[in-house]
Image 1 (cartoon, rainbow, N blue to C red):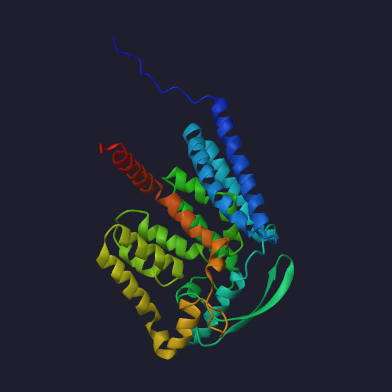
Image 2: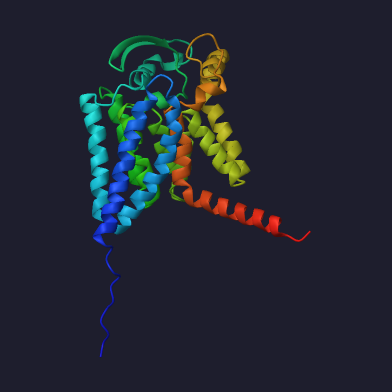
Amino acid sequence: MRGAAIDAPPRPPVATARHAALLALASAASVALLVGTTLDGFTWLIVPLAALTGFAADRYGRLVAASPRAGLVYLGAVVLLAVVSVSTGLLNGLSDEPYSTPAYAHLGWNLYTRPVSFDYVQYGTTYHEVSYDVYLPALTLVQAPGLDYRWVALGAWGAMVYLLRRDSFALGGLSTPWIALLAANGQNDFVPLLAVTAGLALGSYRGRWLVELASLGLKQFANVLVFGYHLLRREYRAALLSVAATVAFLAPFLWLDPGAVYCHVLLGDPTTACTGHGAGFFVFKRNYWLYPTWVALVFHRSLGGWLRAHGARRRRVRNAPE
């Protein structure tokens, strides 16, 4: 007699509800902490916010394992929140980048030798700014003419999470509402993050090196990620090639005005003072934390394996006979 098929027992509804409740709580906390980072003296809240993202990623993975449909509902809710933010201004206006990034495109070959002036709204107040471009030359070209740059950033975020859809931990972490809201605010970091995701996180495929090459012309943090990725993998030739490609992107502008490239691209000074920034400038900036968060979420398996191996080595040394 043929035996009856034995199906895996379904997850109990209580477990699914618990995962969903914890994920909803973490998501709400991420929005509250994001708002907190805009208050004077509370920019340090970005640190617990980034740490909370790991918890949200874990809860999302457990929720999807218990109920894939519930995971889709959660993603839909996050997308809706981001779209509402762009459309209505809710939790928006945290950056001048949706105004400055498209404006730099009008400079052409004068990208680093002439400033642009623009008005932008932040926290409900209109500001006037005069600024030089401080990014790599290709970033300002990635836009849709006539379309608010917030939609470009949000589209890049959406494409990034789609590419990572098979990794529930990375998908859940990068879909935490504070990250989606930064995209809805038009942070230009999501264009290079999409490029490095396609270039480094998807394994080998035809044309991958072209995507990786394109990522080196966008924003300096992407170049650091690509260089560090190859260096840690002991792919020294690829690491050196990433440096050479970066120089090649800047070569025409170095020929026109090397001092301007040094001041604005290498030092990151949007003025003519060329003073650069101290370490404190980078510590608590919201969008800068996107990059280490991306690394932790996308390469969580590799990082976890390294930490376990490192811990095992330390235990062996500690327990070794004298």
